[in-house]
Image (cartoon, rainbow, N blue to C red):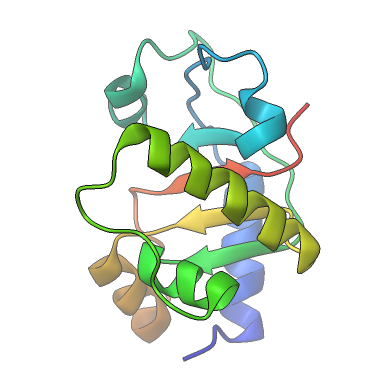
Length: 138
C-alpha cells in the first residue's frame, strides 16, 4: 500500500522539524558512499558510537519512506538483505541503496520498524523511533 499524499507531507514536515542525532563515521568517505545516517534519539545513535553533542537538522523533500523490506522491494524489486548480514555487506548494500534511491529521485530514506510502518499507514501516527539516511549529505 502506497502512502497517501497527506501522510507523505506530514512525515516530510516531521523529518524537517525534528532534532536528529548523528555519530561521525570512522571512514571519511562514508557520506559520499552511503549518505549520512541520523537517529531519532541520542540513545538510538549510541548503538553506533558516541553521538555528537548537538542534534542535527535535516532538510529533505523527497524521502523514500518504509520499513526495511518495503524500501528494498521499492529499490530492487525484492528483499535483498538478510538478518545476519555482516557489517561489510551492510555498508555495500547501503551504498547500493543510495545509488538506486538517488537515481529514482529520492533525497533520503526514512526507515521505520515493520509494525510502526503498518500503524503509520493505518492511523497516521508517526512513531518515535526512526532512522534517516540523508543521501546528499554535506
